[in-house]
Image (cartoon, rainbow, N blue to C red; front, side, top):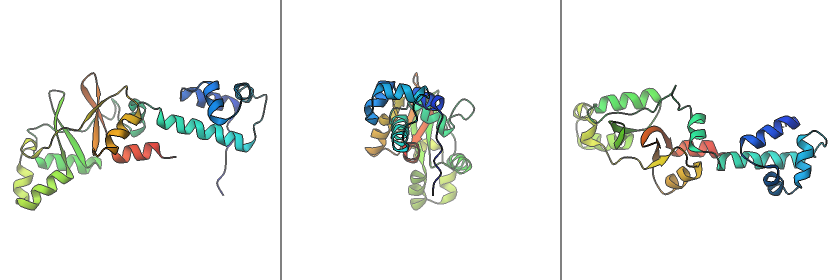
Length: 196
């Protein structure tokens, strides 16, 4: 049996504010009055367990569907401390493979002068290995086998925008901040971030 921890009134208020919901919006989605939300947050009323669970479910759902890409990148661990992993067009395929393996990723953007000019993935490399000697493949430059760049999305967009692009068939999307690549979001990132 899963243990259910009851948040304090202050914690509920902070959770609501963190996801950008007003008391009225939360009340409407939960199916209670705004005044009841206010009284719960002030500690004047102890809600039933079912009401509390509905409140927490609405907050959690809103968090994942209305989060920005910045929130997702922070959750993923991509920040100034954990920068985007990429290769240049002159880098060898061997270097791309080493980076993918070291970081546990399956694709990389190809970047030149802060602009995405292509992409390389495990699939791209496997296609080459099927028609060419492995030594030759690994000594090729990335630009010789790279594919078109990943679609781009602005850091200020919502997670739903990335979800839509990935649902349409893109393997990944490149996140830009003022046209500068700063992160990458893949299918598994969106799935994991939006899970209930």
